[in-house]
Image (cartoon, rainbow, N blue to C red; front, side, top):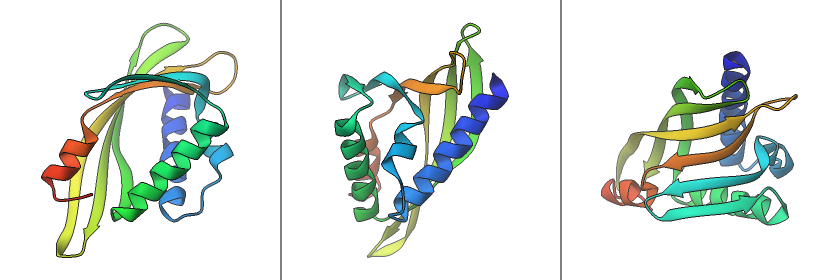
Length: 143
């Protein structure tokens, strides 16, 4: 399952890049996710469904990233912790680069821990745990 999960995140990274360029198909982005998911951060826990509302929220999220000057989002590393034959946690180390009007680009490294399930076909993300993105961006003068 390791190779398939790594391939899933390579695809996700490519889709993120296309989205930053304003050239993403939200159906394709949504195909990375399971039919339902859970997300946890210091802001709390959220549950959702992979539906039209989710696709719209993802599209708005990418628009926000473009608006705050996100130039690039790339994966530095993927470490996989198996849970059982169908589930794992993918610890993904990201690097993001932001353009600033009043100075040089800002590079921020961060980690997101994704819950991944593989039932028959391709693996899908069914959850993630992340840090306080807004606070990190604020500390770097972004947003």
